[in-house]
Length: 96
Image 1 (cartoon, rainbow, N blue to C red):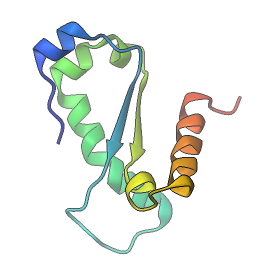
Image 2 (tube, rainbow, N blue to C red):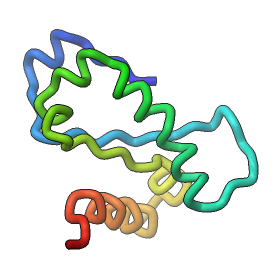
Image 3 (cartoon, rainbow, N blue to C red):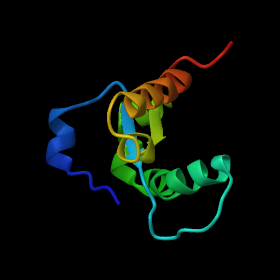
Image 4 (tube, rainbow, N blue to C red):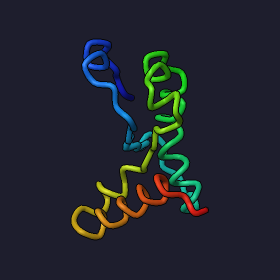
């Protein structure tokens, strides 16, 4: 769960937002794509329902990106960092 504070938001208006998402509440065998979606779904839903989050320019411009936290937490070090950066690159610079 994330929390947005109005005072913090008033001071900073980000151009883009990165959200690291993890959902450890339900462990079940999933394919890789299902696992990633499972990790992201709760945060994405919370973001969509939050009026403050939706009022941000980054949200209005569609520049909010969610990356599964397991890429960093499950693989600390250079390999996890490379996977995280590859995912970030794929979201920021989609194939044309």
